[in-house]
Image (cartoon, rainbow, N blue to C red; front, side):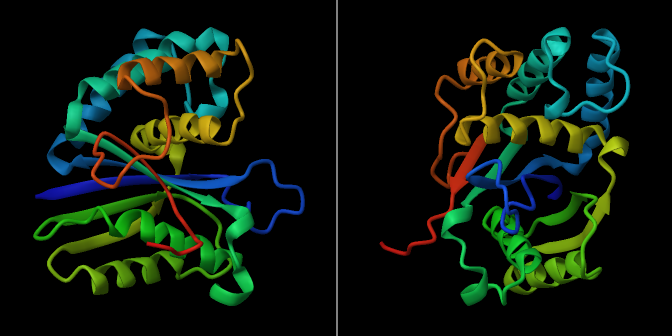
Amino acid sequence: MDINVYCDEAYPDLFSSNRPQAKYLLIGSLWLKSADQQMYKTEIHELRDQYKIGGEFKWGKASPSKIDFYKALISWYIAKGEDLRFRCIAVDRQKVNLVQYHESDQELGFYKFYYQMIHHWLHDFNSYRIFCDFKQNRQPDRLHTLQRCLSSSNLSSTVETVQAVRSDESVLIQSNDVLLGLASARINNRLNENSAKEEIVGHMEDLLHREIRPTPLHEKKFNLFKIDLQGGW
């Protein structure tokens, strides 16, 4: 089966920030069959037209005037069942040792966690095309290296490409940004009481029939994995 994966991140510079705004870095991904890509894009554009949303939509733009669109987008996502899946990882910045494990390089550490987010959802005999929101990297070959590492560790699947695209050119990356944003807002306790974003998160939790919180690996629809960097068994 051919699979497309659309990726984005929340608080990507958290490891190096002197004034961190959150506890957890999140990296998220939207997974779908390649054959469904065009249908999903068309349906999202129809939602945008219905609610008169111009330009790029993302979690940071969620507001009272646009709340109906964001709730409709979430309802659309839920209605697709397991044909459309979301996975993100949360990394506690206070437990990341850049010096010991990442050569004092926060960018290297970031892409190691990117690898972990994708690697555990690659299945044998599938082919994957991975699209990452454009990010200015200090080392320009980071995505090539990520593809090589994923290919080397998943010999029975094919990672055809890992490439950067700009979010304003992809409604699927924008949709992933919304799902990742609400997950980050909940786990980082960044929701203001009675705000539009709190209502949007509540709508998602109503449709999931549970709180947004860390899930086991086998959760397929809305998977949030909090990495344990302390070891144990």
